[in-house]
Image 1 (cartoon, rainbow, N blue to C red):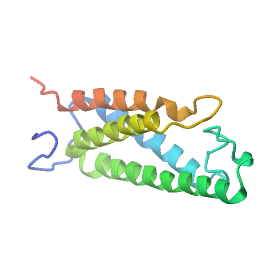
Image 2 (cartoon, rainbow, N blue to C red):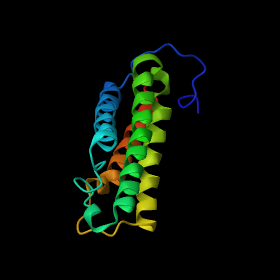
Image 3 (cartoon, rainbow, N blue to C red):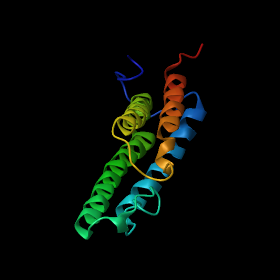
Image 4 (cartoon, rainbow, N blue to C red):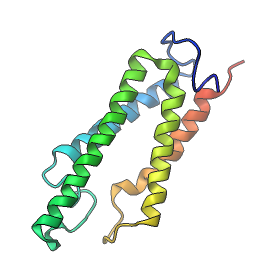
Amino acid sequence: MKKLIPQTIENKIPSNKIVYYYCWLLIGFNLFRSLEHIFAEDGGAETIAGIPLSSYSPEAANNIVSIFAQWGFSQLVLACILLLIVLKIRELIPLMLLIIALENILRAGIGQYKSLIIDSAPPGALTPLIGLVTLIFFFISIRVNN
């Protein structure tokens, strides 16, 4: 528990530098996908996820694009929080890795429960893999070094 919520913050780079570099990779990935959802004309709904927007009414298609953009903003917030932690509050890296891992894994679970009806799996189908890899890095980050 001390690794998740440390008593002191000294902003030290984790002893296992691979965790630190993985966080930078996560920041880049999350920034890219969030900005794509926010700024792409279709929010990535059709061009990335394969949702056939042209088969819906303009209002329905607009609602889907809006939801994708809003989701992109949520991703941007997580990326910015991780960036802040990596730059200024590095002792919270394990907590943030756990949050990101759970967000990806549980979102994948919701995706199974309420799945998209599309021709092929979107890149978001990698979400559980990203979550599991991040969970592995979480466990690496809390491992006690002797």
